[in-house]
Length: 139
View 1: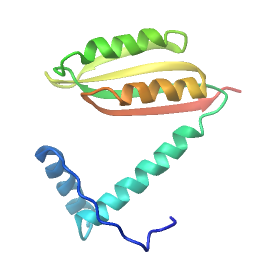
View 2 (view 1 turned 180 degrees about the horizontal axis):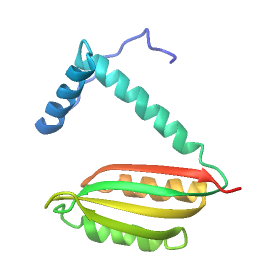
View 3 (view 1 turned 90 degrees about the vertical axis):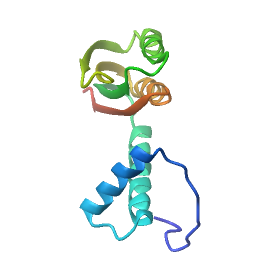
């Protein structure tokens, strides 16, 4: 990756529970520091972002999303986003992971850029923990 040899310092604020989980992961993976773990996480995020931008043509796939059920207004926002994209959503399944956390699996089919746009709309909602789009090209 270009510029890896030139380091810049940044400061970030994280909720304590997120930092504790991150520290546990970097310890288990054998990273020598948080910085090393953060660099690896950022590289992974960049790779995923670039992969998402390479979704072209007619595709079929699935969006998996985990979110906080108790986040005020989130359920309505998720429903609104899905209704605005009814032309590419084939089906969805809602599953309760815990009392507070839910998983939504959304089957999608259509133009790759529209699928990506839907995924990014869901990612942007407050209370959403993770969203992943997986697609295959329709022959």
